[in-house]
Length: 135
Image 1: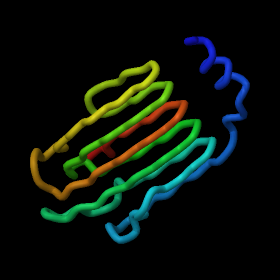
Image 2 (image 1 turned 90 degrees about the horizontal axis):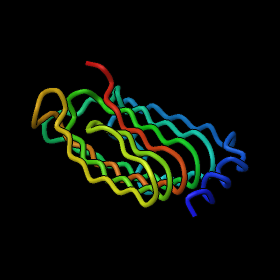
Image 3 (image 1 turned 30 degrees about the vertical axis):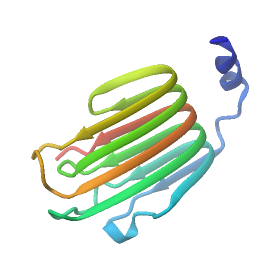
């Protein structure tokens, strides 16, 4: 059974969609669930200024591929990541395999404060990465 996903991924055309968005304001962060099929998806939120008390959320549902979210160095981040098969890399390290679920809160380089961001990430097969932009 473990080989079935590997064969499917090996035969799938993962060159599908290449999507990248880099909003610079809180209001420019997409609302509602962002749906993506197959490919490489990048949300770079590193230039968004989060003042104390400001909050935003981003929900992404993707079928197959790579999903990367880059967050600012000081924002408090709550990550809810669900992955069918593959690898999840976040502030606390990485895990891989089938049926991965990660619930992480990371307060950033400044500790509590600096605004808050909630990420709800759902990927069928592939890799999820959430990382901070260097301060």
